[in-house]
Length: 477
Image 1 (cartoon, helix red, strand yellow):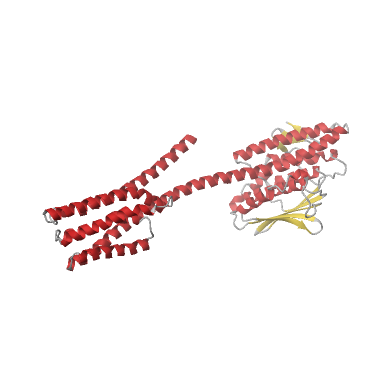
Image 2 (cartoon, helix red, strand yellow):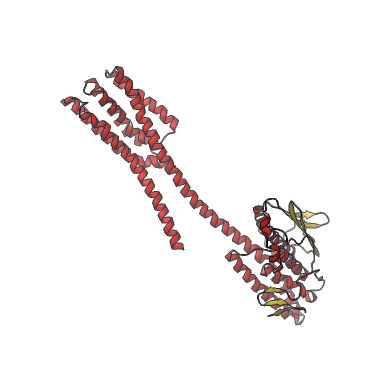
């Protein structure tokens, strides 16, 4: 797949380079074509076949060919200047300007000695500014180029008027000179503009790919934080409990370490799901898991309000992550004794509130276990922002800490919630159901711990090959 993608990218890149090369080659051929056509055609019958007119005409043709060489030499630099890649050095225009002055002078002398007829003179007038303006049209804005074209037309017309050209021929010099400049403007400038748009689109495609990679990295980091945060907190809690029980010589320490082992295995499965991109949180399972985990830690947890089974799947997933992160923060920060989780679903929006007491006073440092402020709330805000939701967290009255998540239901299609109840009834995510069994160890926790108000019913399958038994622990089947 990688080789195929690289080959496709190389082919697209090669196509762009071929189009760019074709565009530059076409522009570089324009001055040669007009030099040979408009400067060489008068030699057939418009230039008098005498030594002086022929010599002046030949010198004028050589000057025109030299202008074509300089135009091709400056084309790449002017093209890159137009694309914004580099700045065109102004000194490179000195030689083309000097050759243009020489060409206008030779043209005036040729007209002064009556060496060319009127039609031939107009053809030579058409070709005189072509090589210079092809370079100049890519260096200046259109308005300035038109002003310079008018000035160049006035210069050529004035030189021929001084040389004695009069009447209709002199009147035809003005439109012929302007026609050459306008022809370059409408042919060269759009070609360069289209190439600049194509290269910008190619660069935008590369930037879009890099942004997609960065977004996937952020998603992966956010999911890893949300998945492992609470599991590691439960593992640390049960490990401390096992150490305390072992120091007292209690045999229940073995059961606690078995539970730690099972939670670690469930965490491994959740990490695999995150890597595959299949990890989704379920609100009902996360509510049960939060009750079990907080109950095992001696925190009285109460869930009130709507169960959320009828909510759309994206809303359930987002609120499930909120419950998981909130339970993790309750375990890691402060010393709460009770926690209340409220779910209120209306016709316009669904609101989830998590309140707990024992929050650390404002201005105090975080606990050592927290290792700094973390990125959990920022990740929740990113998840809720996808659904136009919002998140507020901060101290409330009565020494409480309140976290409120709000998701509007107007933008969520009704069919998005089909099957959500079935998914919740099947146990949701494996990790959340696995952790919800932690309340069964409430009889063996440290002194002062309180029994949780709810948990997973006996017989429920909480992990592959593991069911909750009727007694204090799980059964392996």
